[in-house]
Image 1 (cartoon, rainbow, N blue to C red):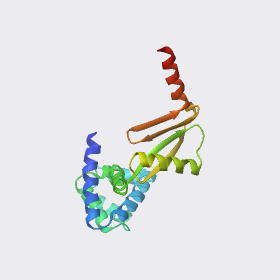
Image 2 (cartoon, rainbow, N blue to C red; image 1 turned 180 degrees about the vertical axis):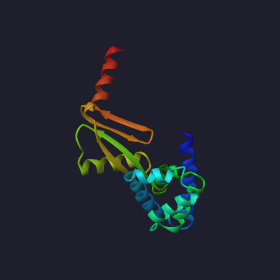
Image 3 (tube, rainbow, N blue to C red; image 1 turned 120 degrees about the horizontal axis):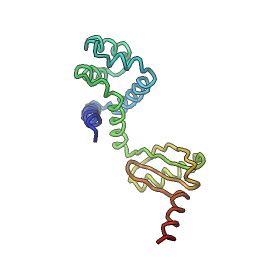
Image 4 (cartoon, one colour; image 1 turned 90 degrees about the vertical axis):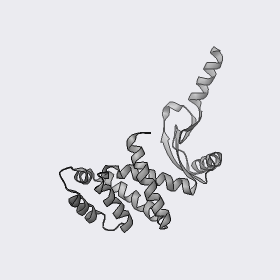
Length: 179
């Protein structure tokens, strides 16, 4: 685990604990998702927030103006990050926090690779089958197009890969023939 992810993980876990204690898990999840989207959309703001020539107070004032509508506890958390010069971790913290929320709800993210876009029915069927395999209640599936698969699908959930693509089957046949 990289040092950055480790640090962000500690902050995200602490924030998650506070959210659970205050029954704000869903509120923080939604607001962090919006916050991350805003940060990704406005790189100039991020540069200002990370600018070392700005004082902590200036950064807090800037954050206060931009994040005025978020939950006060979450705003205080952002101030804490600014106080500790960790504001550049916000996006990663949001990702780790969302993973904790998903774990709590029994939800996992899955990447499904196919040659053509899959229909909603196919995605739902894959979600149901693989959620059961992973002991999850639901999978959030992202369908990616990969023409090199030739056919079939490849499902990636965390570190697990389920490859039922024609490409892999042909490679397996080739290995068996050569053996």
